[in-house]
Image 1 (cartoon, rainbow, N blue to C red):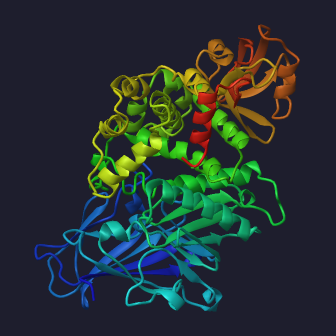
Image 2 (spheres, rainbow, N blue to C red; image 1 turned 90 degrees about the horizontal axis):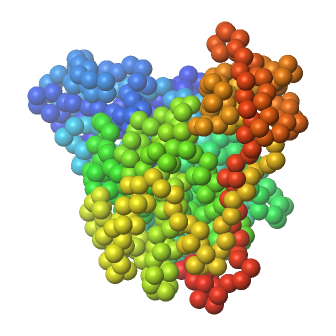
Length: 591
């Protein structure tokens, strides 16, 4: 038996409560400390998981042991003799990939939101007894996780409740657990068993999904080189009416999707929704290398009690965002034209945000804790996404390397270098490590490129870089009607401004986020009428808009703008030279 043993039970599914017990064989003589992480790796915001602990107690045999809470997520037990047992309840009603969720249909948890860390025993192996809920209602429930089974339970007993084992606390919290009557599908990629466990009502072409995922996974494994860095991999999928999200782990990923994102039986076409789901799977799978094993030095090791700052998230999230779609086309799951549409969408998203001209990618990475993950109504005007612009930096670097070395070196070589020097050694990537790796494999001087791309706020020279591989980038307006320069949300027939964009017509006139639009030139504004009202005007027209700000009716005179040419369009150029054609084939081929 391990010195630390966890026991987790969905004790009251109808009340969304997990009960957790920890047996500590050798508690610290001066009093045992325990704490719950404040955040989960991969989601850079302080989430205060300890707030979901409903009640907690400690005992030494039959004797109660006093527990003192010493900060927001840390407790200390009084000195005791013998085994210390800590028992507590966790409220689990967060239907996301980050925390824990439990009801009468299924249970899901990340260890970081349910398992207290035993201070002083972080590196010690621990046992985890995952127990089923009581009652016949749950007799069909089983378990999906990559947490290793204890005592030779693999094989026929896989997916059962019972004893699992982790090498230490870091491993314990890096294997999410799904329990319920989920659908299970399997495939192998480069000989490695993969599972897709899907919870929630859905209908699906499982064979198509598994085949598409196999091709994507095999391409990624071969990019970095076999063997894969795990013995088994699980996609944990929660299918709901409307949802989207993913979180990476060392040998699994937790995914939230709309059930309509999954491939329907009998559908041969590639829908936008299914393509997006495959991109999400590809993104989280790529993280198995790029962030789970190739990590910033600031994350070696993680300090889960506070923010961990790095200016490199553009490389770990942005480069992953570049490769997630690239893997789809290189593996043959989508067409070249489909890839160009996805790339154009990314360019459009970046160009529509005025914050790209104010915040650098490095600053965006550093401030993720307080800005990117806590966006407000001014976010488009103030921040740039290290996901989307980071993906464009990856594109720019990839094309720069290919062009300047005549196809001899690419970003693929940089990723393999990072894998060799950092992923396989456990040595964190220093803040200038990506640049150094790129220079080492290419022989190029890239200090200016990285300074401008990641520390500056100028737009990237994508036109020239894409032209070198025979591609044209153009921008056009999304429509012909004049615009207010706002983003809106509808509640019934009510139209509310959620964001007012810098230098737009609405901002110039004094409209603000939160204003509820009432009328345009004395005609009522509704969710269905606003576009029609604008379509009948011309750019430069002045209109009168009535709006409520809180409980005050206000009047604004707004001079309408022409729709901006900010929608990217990417296509093969009419004339492509032989060298450009060769680079294009190499870039979008299999490496």
